[in-house]
Length: 189
Figure 1 (cartoon, rainbow, N blue to C red):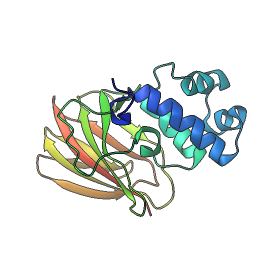
Figure 2 (cartoon, rainbow, N blue to C red):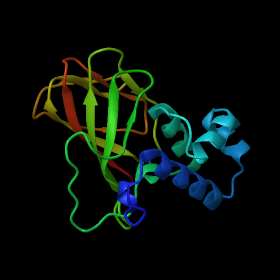
Figure 3 (cartoon, one colour):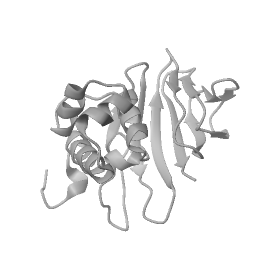
Figure 4 (tube, one colour):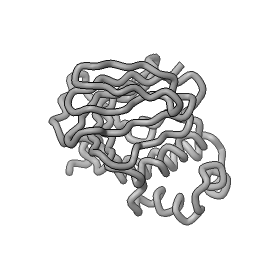
């Protein structure tokens, strides 16, 4: 790892620095952010110190508590041309299901979208609580099959299928075949 290239820092270091910076920017105490996110203060303190193994659910709860997009925890400055090889990049995993999200492109200043590579396996669905108001998600299945969309009206998708749905309501992603992969674009309004 090179200190000169922040893109090469392990995800936990980036998450720790981002959590501290966003909490301080918001003028909130550890106690208040932990309360809002529904986690223990000790857990947040550990995460801000670069420790622990946070689940996707914990990180989402912290983003909602801080009023920031999920990519705000993983984004590092990037060069103009960026290549992320399959299986690389800052990834986080669900504690509830075999589901992982890798940030491919964070929302640059002035833009309002983040791009993720999704890997998922059959089993429990990945249920997401409502995100910030106005967030829309766009999903394209590249392999496998999945149920995707709002919690009350998910749609079965096959390779090449696309869906757009409001993510400011409960929504889900459930792989129906091994090796399910997708691209997810989160659009912030």
